[in-house]
Length: 153
Ligand SMILES: CC(C)(COP(=O)(O)OP(=O)(O)OC[C@H]1O[C@@H](n2cnc3c(N)ncnc32)[C@H](O)[C@@H]1OP(=O)(O)O)[C@@H](O)C(=O)NCCC(=O)NCCS
Image (cartoon, rainbow, N blue to C red; front, top):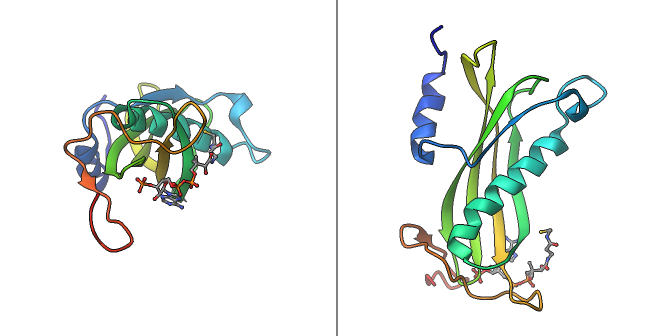
């Protein structure tokens, strides 16, 4: 069976590498009282996927600081196979900003793909006392974060 994927999504996926950070099949326990998947369930998986991405640059423990620009674009249904694609957008001294693209695969053989959510998450690397600490991981290919003066760190 041919796969259906909108051209705009195909283009967008090119920015995220080939494999999603995580994939999850949505179950009846994940629904709200309308019968669709609860947004909080999507957010929880999104946070997890983004944190795995941020760990690569942090190289140490991190906490979620901000999840923003969350855009729920289309409903997710029970039985959908949902992929969470991530990419590191920016790094600072202690923070890592990650973009997340969420794609649902629907149909008997997951033949229909469509974008369901996008968001941005900021993580802060922390020391053993829970205080912000410098990144220790690999982040050579990312855009440095501008400071308040516009200077990059
Ligand atoms: C994360 C935490 C340690 C950061 O403390 P803080 O006082 O904001 O620390 P700072 O002001 O030094 O900022 C740390 C970094 O976060 C960035 N940051 C802070 N607030 C931000 C915001 N609203 N948006 C984007 N970046 C932000 C800062 O720019 C800085 O980045 P840089 O070092 O790369 O320049 C503290 O807020 C905390 O413990 N929060 C609770 C975290 C949590 O429980 N998360 C949920 C479970 S994981």
